[in-house]
Every structure is written in structure tokens, then in C-alpha cells.
Length: 258
Image (cartoon, rainbow, N blue to C red; front, side):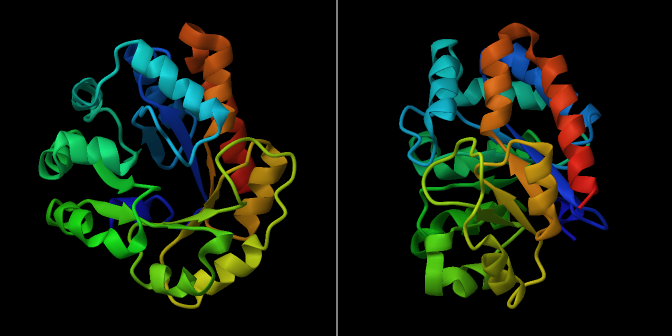
């Protein structure tokens, strides 16, 4: 079993997201430890990018803060290399194809593997063009995590059949961001995925409250939260880690109630 799939073994998973370098890489380091301590099962680490097309304003602003603080891909690798022996849960990168391509695909994947990353989510990589990067990832024993949205329609089963690690099911249309109500046909989407694969499905985009986390975990294998955590970091800056720890602990408990 892959380390990513193992995060879902016999339990509902809670997957928090953090933008690397927001507000600084030192704070990111504290947040990663806080998330692990609070019971996170897997962590998504966002690589800041100037044009994150799938992100709403909350994460766009986090990317801007991270880039303004001097965060680079090499500095993120350096940070993770320094703590990889102390992080015992899987970590995956959430990034766009441009930063990977600009860095050099093989070099990026090799460095990601060396610093303890288990997989990647690349929202702007079309399913039909995934082979170039997937081959390099798999050669380095990393997995390419597929995103499936309500708009995927007839492509849902095709994407699900070839999924690795876990399937990232997008709860709603549009970009990332906190939502008061999650009301798409997400149950039907999960059902379609489960018809063709045993790989875990986690739901993301819009989840922010414990009630939403419990509700989504009831119909899937876990919940992903990004914008709500990034908002905590925006509010508390250098002192964010303890607030993130408390939030992740509460959300993990909510997922366990499903």
C-alpha cells in the first residue's frame, strides 16, 4: 500500500493545507509540526505561484505574501529536507504545472522525493496530458493525485480508473474558498468514482466548519481544508501555529464522528 493510501487505512482522513512561506518559512515549519501533532493524516503543501488559477482570493493573497517574503521552490525543499525525519505523516505538494516546468520536471520530482514528498496535485494539468509528469513521478515512487469535479461528467470514471493515492473530489464549482453551504451532487460523484476504483476519495473546496467536515466525511473517506486554515494564518501571522493546531484538532475530531 502507498503511504498516501495508508493515511486512510481504517479511518476517515483529515487533510489540511498550508501555503509554504506564508507569512514566512519559519512559520510554515511550526504549522507543519502543529498539524501533525493535532492529528492530521496527510498534509497538502502549496507552492506559492503568481497565477494560481484554481484558487480564490484567500489563497491567492497567501501566495502573494509568501512570494513577498522571499519564498522560492529551493527554499521550500530546504525546509522540508530539514524536518523530513520528524514528519511521520504523508506530505503532498499542491502546485501548478508552470513552476514544475520552469524548475525542470525531473529535477523537481527528484528533489520532492528527497525531501519526503509522497505525491503531487497539479490542478491545471489536463488528464490527457498527465503522462509526461506521471511517468517521472512514478519512477521516483511518487503518485499523481487526480482531481475530479462535478463538471467532469463522462470523464469521471476514466479519471478514477487511473487514479493514484487518493481521489481529490471537488465539492463545488469555481475556485477554492470557504462556503456556507456545499450543495452540489457530491454524493453521486463519489458513487461514480467508487464504481470503478477502491482508492480513497476525499472531498475538498469549501469545507470550513466541523459540521461540514462531518457531513462530507460521512459520504467519502475524508475531508480537505485549505482556505479556512489560510485565513487563520492571515489573521494571526507569526503566531499562527497554535491557532492552526486547535483548528486541525477540532476538524479531525469532526471527521472521526462521521
